[in-house]
Image 1 (tube, rainbow, N blue to C red):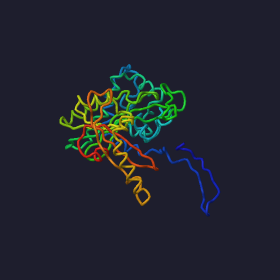
Image 2 (cartoon, one colour):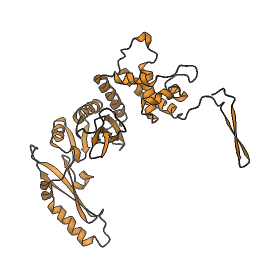
Image 3 (cartoon, one colour):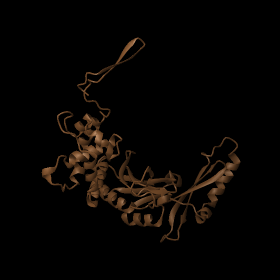
Image 4 (tube, rainbow, N blue to C red):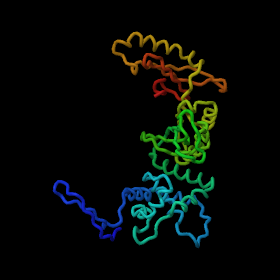
Length: 341
């Protein structure tokens, strides 16, 4: 409607005339895309992603290059349009066209939803792995040059589904139909936590499903840039199992992993639990808070599936008048409180 001569008049407000006109030209609410595109040009992300994808189309019939389609999809997601259906309208958005290096008015529209869906559905596993490696390499490139140690954090989270999406399943822990993506973060000496990889999984996936492949690739990318790098794996009790420990030790990965409480750990931590109870009973009604009543201890513990005993750090605090013991298994040195924190 950029050439429309229609003009609508509305009741005056505070003595001011209110008019609606439609001659403002092509407008967008996503001008921030131009900054996203500038950042992309600096780090070369979409270029590298496009190079990971083979183009098996009949070239004489191609209207949209792989690079244009990758940019269109990535930039739309960056603006919060995660559904490819949104591109049926956004393909004509002037800011998105500029970000994809097309002129807003003179050049054809960008790819439609069916075209983008065909691109996504024809990707092969090796192409997806190559794209994941590309993202990880760009993240690792942001770490300071003098990096000697990093912490890898892994965690699963719910991505609720609304409808009949493929592989969505009910998850009792989250009480929802969802996906259960596995997220991998890396933290360097600058204390910045960066998302390094994400693996989409069905909602009923085992917490550790896909973990070892993700770690294998992350370790290779990290040590390709920092050959002598010290890597520490940090995760909650969903990952504190024999198979994770058995992976870490031969790959020279240190670990701090949560442990689920059991009768054996309760017995071994009885001394520190008793000290916490006595301390709370003595000071709990005289200005001491549950947060201040935190005690730490350590002991050797061997689960039935472990080949040998390992160091376990226990933290015990009194919250709402109840003892709350927590445990981590680790091969790190240092004081128990330092390791737990």
